[in-house]
Image 1 (tube, rainbow, N blue to C red):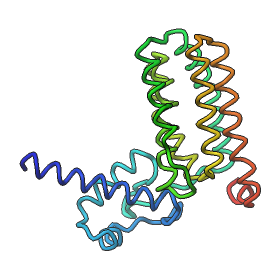
Image 2 (image 1 turned 45 degrees about the horizontal axis):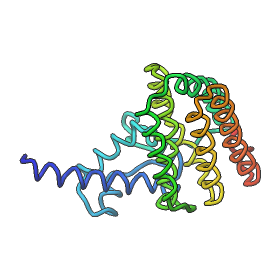
Image 3 (image 1 turned 90 degrees about the vertical axis):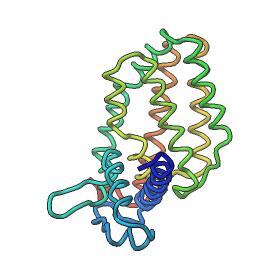
Length: 230
């Protein structure tokens, strides 16, 4: 396979990956529902090969699960208890990570964080995955970058494996005002880092996580989902 053919194939696989991911995030493919490779191939008008490659990537994202004999199915959304446990994990890890990252912060680290916030200001928000995808990806990059800058590879790996942002946005596709609020809170966090204020950064991160959790819980209760997912 020459380089050009490989490049075209990769582009196709990326497009198929994004298409199936959108179906999962928007619940077109319902949580727990079996994922038909044949059906996806027909609907997306491609062979099964890029479908299988995309599903393998989505399995690593924890958006689909593969079971022997039955094939792929969409991963269930977080239960209420799992949501609480996920935030417990984040409360233990991220405030500690940002405090350490602030103490160790370099000029290069500052520039990477400022660049990420500048990109966020140009994001278009909305209620479908195609609209809020950029917010989700920014959210993941911003929080992951802070954990990475803490210099602790074990915390970095644990945070990556949690796929917490995909889980949260899939559970609760937030409205545009709420998405903008989260980005503003990222700006507050960045200010404490630039001020070289480790305790302030820890407090800002803790407040942001509390706000994030509290923005999701009322939505679940209002939609009557708490009883269904406990």
